[in-house]
Structure formats: structure tokens, C-alpha cells
Image (tube, rainbow, N blue to C red; front, side):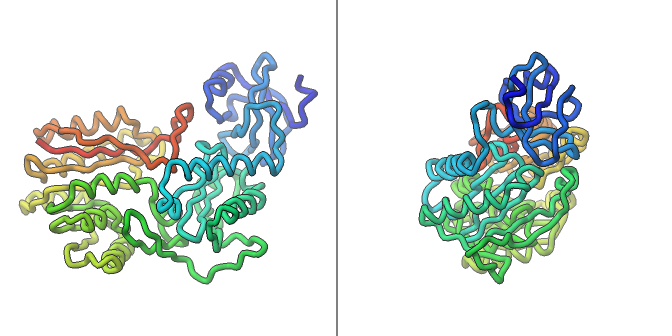
Length: 408
């Protein structure tokens, strides 16, 4: 059977076989028991210990994730037609789950959830911002980008440039150099700017896709911001970890009496202030550069009053080793927010770390509420927007946990 295949064969452990059969696409280096040799960045076939074909994926000896499967179909041919079908599936899915208005700013490719391991493609109006964190995908990205541009253009979408944000340290682990800049494509001139104005939920933002966090803007909270806006009218709002002000602006536009936005980054606060001015909301908003861990107890001691507090922190943990310390951080800020709110006040809180599981986060919130001697009345439990789809057999694709509570 192996001799009939065109790609180098690899044999894996029974444990790896079971993981693949359950639908997970990763094979770790410690799970490979034989076969090869396989060139880095090229495709390899994976077989179980009894010779059963499991799938085909990109091999990389530099990575702990030695093989990232892209297909479990032995009949697939990995030509341009194959990858074009995959890209069309991804775009058609977004067209099905998002409104036409939301398609102008959305995630078009979400890595493993769209069967493009390690690839992110975000659309900000006429600019695509990409991040490539696996060697195999990096090797074929000229083909992928050309095909994606063609698919979007044929569908009437105007794209003026593709910008690569390949400055993540995760590229080091794949044996790739870090880089950033516009990707050259024939017939596509290089834009002169690294910023673009986007519109989300009726609010305009300036997105700096060269220097901003990740790809420049967090699209995954789009509908969670709408949920916060729905309970904001007439309320005094404190938005912690505001970044460029997205939650704060949604609250203010919805009719909040006043919104105070806080972030430790001065540049983020400056951008948030610009966005407030751009949307004509400066008269009901104030901004502060501060560490939220210091600010919350200070506000409590001053007996400051808020009706709604929003906690949207960065990921406190990016590995299982630091989950305990991260739990303490989440517990502290939620405890402080619950103490600061009056009975009947509202709390929006979230975690964007995959390693902070839903069960762990529930425990953190329960302990914080017990310490603050309050009860939490759940209004909504939400996750990331559907353009960041969750593949149930790949738990790594489920990362955002978002809750709206009334504190009683």
C-alpha cells in the first residue's frame, strides 16, 4: 500500500493514530516511529502502526508538531485545483454566516479550522493581512495568495494589497525567519500606507496593520461588542484593557452616559482617543494610561461608581505551564471589578487563551464572586465570532470565552 503513494511514508504510534481518527490534524515528533526521510516543508503520508493510511500533511523536522495534516482522503491530489477549492469553501462559508456589511472586515482563513494549518488571513476593507506560522504553508503561499486574490476579485471584492505580519516568535519554532511587509503579486501595486479605515458595528477605526497587535485589530469580538452595546444605554462604563477602544466606543455609541477607557499602552490609548474623535464620541469618553491591576483597587478605595465594567485582557497564558499564574490574574481583576460594582451592576468579562479552558474560567469566576460576596446572574455566554470557526475535533480552535453578568 505504501509503495503506491507518491509522498514519503511515516509510521506513527497507536496514540497518534487514535488522535487522527478522532479528527485532530497534528502529529508530534515523539509520535513518529519510522519511515521517511521527508524534506522539510514538503508533504508526507502518515500511516498507523498496522499500515492503515491516516492522511497527508506538511512535514517539518524543526517543529514539535512534526506533521500538520491537510487531508485524510487518499485520493486527493494537492494541485492548484485542490487549494482553490479549499479557499472557495472558506470564502463561501464567510458569505453564509456574515452579513454583506461584515464581510468587508472579517477573518477569511482561520488556520486549522479552515484546513490551512498555521495560516491566518484577515480582511480590513481593501487590505488582506496574513500570518503564516507553518513551513509547508509558507512554501506554497505565493500560490495561495494568488488564488485567494482571484476568488475575491471575481466575487466583486476590491483588494489593493496583501500585507504579511510574519513577526511572531512562533516562526522561530518552525525554523523560519521573522519578517513583515507587502507581499508582491503581479498586477497588484504596493500601497503607500500601513493604515486603513475600517467600519465595524457602525463605528470607524483606524487600523495600523504594520504595528498594531497581531494583524492590527481584533475581529473576533465583533458580536460580543454588540452584546455590550445593548446594555450600555444610560450607564457609567469602565472599559479595562481597552486597546484601541473598541468595546468603549460601542458602549458610547449605544448611549452610555459616560465611558472611561483604560490601557497600559500609551500608544493604544492615543489610538483609542483618535477613534473617539473620528466617531464624534469624545464628549462622553475619557481615557487613561494605567495598569488595570493597580487601577481597580485604587478606584474601589476612592469609591468610584460604575454601572458596567468590561474586562477584555490579553491572554494571561500561552502555555499549560503558566495556567495557575494566569488563573490568579483573572481571579484578581474579576474580584476587583465585582467589588467595585454596585448590586445590580453589570460585568462583561472574557479570556482569549485556549489554555484557560471554559471549566477553569468558570472556576475562576466562581471563586472571585465568592471572595467578593456577590452572586452572578448570567445574561449571556458567548464565544468568538463565526468567521473564527470552532472545529469541535480541534480544541485549539476554541479559545474565546465571553460572559455578561449582572452582579447581585
